[in-house]
Image (cartoon, rainbow, N blue to C red; front, top):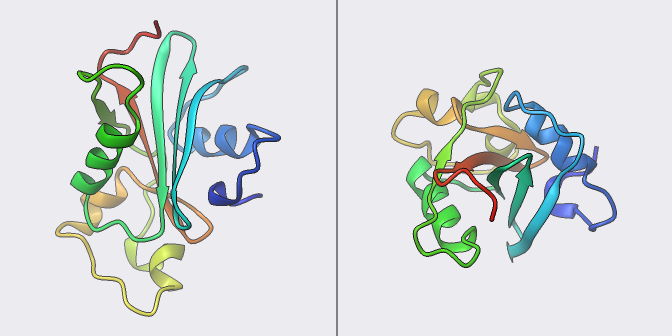
Length: 139
């Protein structure tokens, strides 16, 4: 499985694999935006049916607010009022044993690691989060 940050645009399979972790499936994904924010973080905005989602991946994530801020800043598509609600993962992971934490030399934990992991899955060395648009309709 290709790590999300190594995505080359040839296939949406890495995204379909990740959204299954959030109990979503898709026959077709309408990719609206992809942006590499740094060598260690990426963001995708895409549609499934008539709903819009934002997928964010990064190796060091200090808090859930950091994720929401990144989605609000980089996930917006021509809409200043767009906001995202984080979706919970289907299977809760253990923060201490997650790949981003276990492979890092130092990783300061978030204020509430258990709550953090309710919304995080992993892809290689990255934590991955999925937000659903609060407007919830594609235009």
